Image 1 (cartoon, one colour):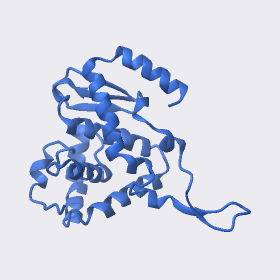
Image 2 (cartoon, helix red, strand yellow):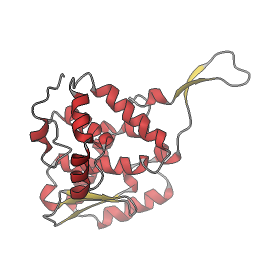
Image 3 (tube, helix red, strand yellow):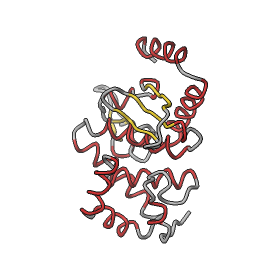
Image 4 (cartoon, helix red, strand yellow):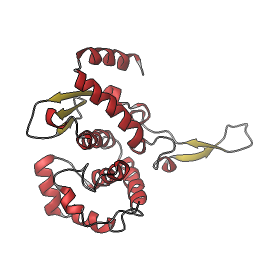
Length: 214
């Protein structure tokens, strides 16, 4: 944690409510469990896409190494984000990338899927500011990982990508692209949820006919 982040956390911890502190600690745990792939962490599914062999000029043997990645991926931490709870009946939460604020509705503080949903937005907000190939790398890694567990994944993606569905989602809740869909499935499976739980927007009913092979 750098000095600026350390100062922010001291300030935040003094200002945050007890519920916000509890939710923040949960966000840190979810970050470690489910989002390493979106930051290309060692051992994650995306790490193979930055894995290389290298050696020093005078060395005889090649060693495992990784290609450089943007600093925002290498050093990102939820400790850079302000998490807050608001009283709102309009939505379960939102993420404001420009202000680095993740908000959860007071009605949803016990709904882990609401926090996980906004955390996908948080990470995708980072990826979408980078060259497009980083988005593609995360997309491909998630697709390759999920296609064994979800035999009908291609059909699900085709239905999701249809312009009528994408337009309706965009008008009702912003960006929920295919990468978001795949990451939500990845977390659903990890959490033992029915498909569509983390995605929200009533998608559990749309996906209940599909089989998950654990």
